[in-house]
Image (cartoon, rainbow over all chains, first blue to last red; front, side, top):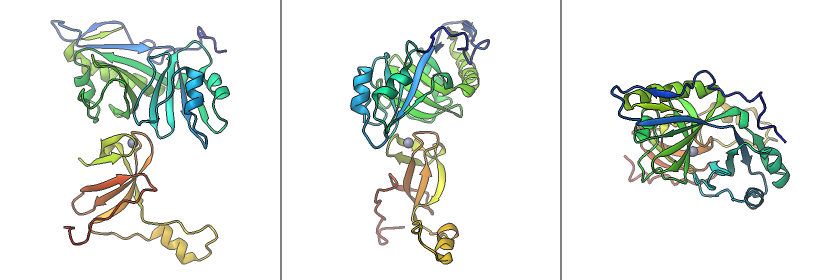
Amino acid sequence: MADPASPLRRSALAGLLIPGDFGAAPFNGPGILIAERGPLSVVQIEAGSDDPIAAAGEALGVAPSSVPNEATGSGRPRILGTGTGRWIVSEPESRDLAAHLRAALPESAAVTGLSHARVCLRLSGRDARTLLAKGCGIDLHPDAFQPGTSRMTSLFHASVLIDCRSAEPVYDIYVHRSYAAHLFEMLRDGALEFGCRIA
Amino acid sequence: MLYIDCPYCGSRGHEEFTYIGDATKKRPDSAEKSDSAWFDYVYLRDNPRGPHLELWHHSLGCREVVKVLRNTLTHEILGAGRPGDEIAMPDAETER
Ligand SMILES: [Zn+2]
């Protein structure tokens, strides 16, 4: 059982993510809200010769979708498709999710713990779509990128997984830990013109 | 901008992809002993003017290999699918 309060778990944005209101004088925002989510358990499942969907559904209470880009679960856990036969399972850290899945899934499935390798930023606010469009080439129109789906793409040249949580809009952006500082700074700087609240 | 219809991700800009190479080359059987067969497989490539089957890696997306039919003259993307998919070549008559 992983210790959720382990002092070894240190945010990749420690010292960089400073809460407050920035940019856009007069501040008529915030047009953008940025917050780090965590600590999260993030685990990748990759199917082998046996289909792991049924077993994963039993172990998690919600089954991964075989439809490309379709997300399932409301957060505890949230399951995102990242490729054919590949999913990311994410939930607030409370148990050893990787061990739980490893025990439940067929032997042929590859289960990889990524909790310490990913940072999750939550981006929301009325101008969130415009900010994403500054650094991302996918179709962000609300009809094209709908809640309940996610996208593997690049954002400010960093490889990311973007989960559309709500039409408000609210996006959860998963990024490799070593790119988190770069991505956070690009998002913050890009958000200044809209008024940016960092929490 | 070229848009490639990735079988998993859907339509994406070509800057998310990395070009791998010719998709028409078939690896010889591992028991093949002829040097010329291996030389052909490793080094020899046609340089067609017109439709060409290629492999692209969706490196900034699902990380899967996509087979793409691209017109090397006009850059038009004529089709895309998984590496094992058959992608029909356009008729020579209707081409150009
Ligand atoms: Zn793709």
